[in-house]
Length: 160
Image (tube, rainbow, N blue to C red):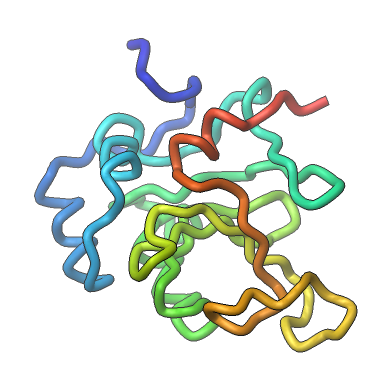
């Protein structure tokens, strides 16, 4: 079945509106419409090699997975990932995926930056040599990737 999202052969399990609503209740926020649509249609997984790399700073990183609601493997489950990272992320952000190096792709779900996609690097957020400080959550381990989830997905590039 062709979708409005880049081909994802290893999709997450099918979910319905009730599953999405349960997750929203857990995080205390409504998900952006484009991400809700993605969960309903694809529900995470691993994008094909032709659409998996993203630009970060002057380099590139590769999506290992996009988390899925109700995934049977905790490593890929959206709820479990956010439970594990609850104290590591600013309260406005949820973890929606991971790159091949273990860094986190996040989605802002609250506040003036809601809908934006961010990258949480594995660097020490207090390091003076890290990224410029992001004022709204006072950290150096975060880099903005896109204004929306759809824009993030559209910007994915082939893995060489």
